[in-house]
Image (spheres, one colour):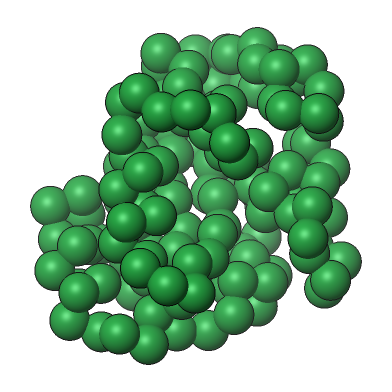
Length: 133
């Protein structure tokens, strides 16, 4: 498993075609309330988060979309990333399955079902709160 800076991840993703899973390392600089799709209105505490997602085709395009400052809110993660004080600090890229990568990370599930509406591995959430480290 490899994590790259925002300057390095794209060249790594383009060089390795077997990559299907990404992890966004997110820092939320202050508490943020957001209505997350059909899940709930939720108050996210400040701190560090890890979001795990996948793209079977064109992984770089999916990550670019998440990094874009303006976008249509389509996925759960879009609602958090649109917060003014949310910042992606690094990107992890993996050839292993999304749920496997998610389960390798210890962290707290704050909002059940976040990013995991199609999860069959009982992850609970694909967003984990790592604390205010």
